[in-house]
Length: 241
Image (cartoon, rainbow, N blue to C red; front, side, top):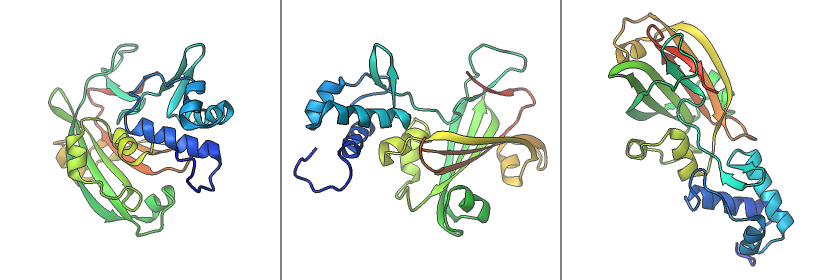
C-alpha cells in the first residue's frame, strides 16, 4: 500500500481492499494458502493486529477461509448451481450428474418492480440479462435467466461471458471484485413460459421446477437475481452437502 496516500478509510479496511484486489487478480489461486499474518503485515506496512482484522473480514465475507492449525486459504468459488445439483431420482450420496452449460447471450432491459425491489434498485434501472441453457447427456434440462445491475457491472458483454469457462460468479469476482453467496432460494412448480419451453424443446405451459435465487456479498445486499427452470421428469434436483 502507498503509505503517503490520503485515505479516510480505517487502515484495516485499506489492507482488506488491497488483499481482496490481490486475490481477485489471481495472485493466490483457489484453495491456495496465504502468507502468515506476520508476513502480510510486513508487506503492507501495518501492525499484525491490523492485518488480522483485514483477514477476519475477508473470512466473514467468504473470500478466505481459516483452517485451524494450518493457515488462511482462498475459499473455493461457488459454481453456477451453488449447492444445487441434479441426480438420478432415488440416488443419494453419489456424485452429481454432469451438466454442460451453453451460453445463449446477454442483453439489456429495464428493472420491473419485483426485481428492482429485490436488488434495491430504482424501477426502470438498466439491467443485464444473461441467458444460459443446461444440457444433460445432450438433452436440454434447465434454463437460467440472470439479472444484474448494468450500472454496477458495466461493460459486461457476451465476449467476456463466452470466453470464460468459469461460472458467472467467477467473472464477477475476477472482473469486479464481488464474491457472491446465495442469500435466499425459493422453490415452486410453475408452468413454463413460451421462451423457456422452446429452449427445453417441450410444449408451452408444461409444469417445471422453478428455482429463484438471490445472491450477493455475504455481508452485503443481493446483486444477482437468477430464475432457473428445471425439468425433473428423469432427474431430481437436490442440495448437495
